Amino acid sequence: MNRLDGKVALISGAARGIGGETARLMVEAGAKVAIGDVLDERGRETARALGGDTLYLHLDVTGEEDWNAAVAAVVGRFGKLDILVNNAGIFLGKDIEAASLAEWERLCAVNLTGVFLGTKLALPALRAAAQHSPHGSAIVNLASVAGLVGSTQDPLYSLTKGGVTLFTKSAALEFARKGYRIRVNSMHPGTIDTDMGDQVLVTRARNLGTNDVEAARRQVIDRLPIGRMGTALDIARGILFLASDDAAFMTGAGLVIDGGITAQ
Image (cartoon, rainbow, N blue to C red; front, side, top):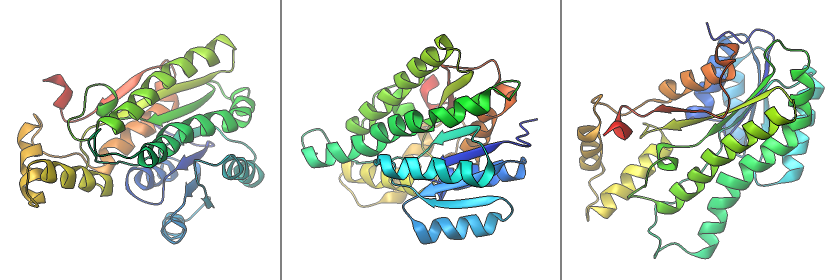
């Protein structure tokens, strides 16, 4: 199940957290993996720890040159590209009234432009690889439950992730119409115990008028039907599934892994 033998994947924002855990699972599943990030030292450490056919690439997802160089490096090293995971993202944690235009533009640059550029510039390589695979190539975009329902903590983050959600569906339909054989699906994590999850808790604590992050954590857990926060591994397993041929009949879909929070 969920095997990626012979596949080549490029994951943005994969030096740590969900991206790093996804890289680990993909290597274990038989894939050759390129880790893209701006955290060069951490990214190189992650690549070394994974060993095997793992490549680290400096990748600022907001720049065309970085994307073109990354895709060229992957194809040059491994001969093709089967899987793109648009994982890189940032969290602002500010109210509409408090956020500046510059902060909004930075949020859009990473969370929206990064997904657009990754999809556009990896497309030729993904399309070429799809012609030689029984179930084609795959793109997995990291959205959020905040891209499905409103966010009380960061409405601007929610706005960007809602954009990723609908871009995923539209890209899936476009590529199907054009016969590219590229599946496009989105992943929607809930509150996850990562560095970004910590930022969410800090924002929640601030909005409660306190600096007690642990109290905010307990409040989050109390609202989760499953009784705990998610882990990077929980989400990485879902990404692995969407990237694999086990999800061969899925495109334009969103996989929600949120401990039941959006079921309420």
